Length: 92
Image (tube, rainbow, N blue to C red; front, side, top):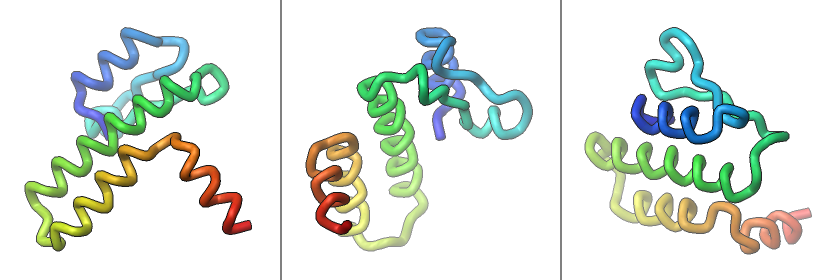
């Protein structure tokens, strides 16, 4: 989920990777990403942007314990890190 401004910035900066979605879904911040055209850095940046926005919105309305928010922030900081890949390998 992105704000309309964030969505427009991603589409303007890399129209070969990001596509805005027409209609209601697009107005709610949804966007298409062409994964085959996206580098890992671009994809990681987009995911971090969207996750951070979701955390901020949840913090304003959430009644969850602070630990849950801290855990989510930790996960965002580590998107794309080697830790995730090694954790996934260890599970298999």
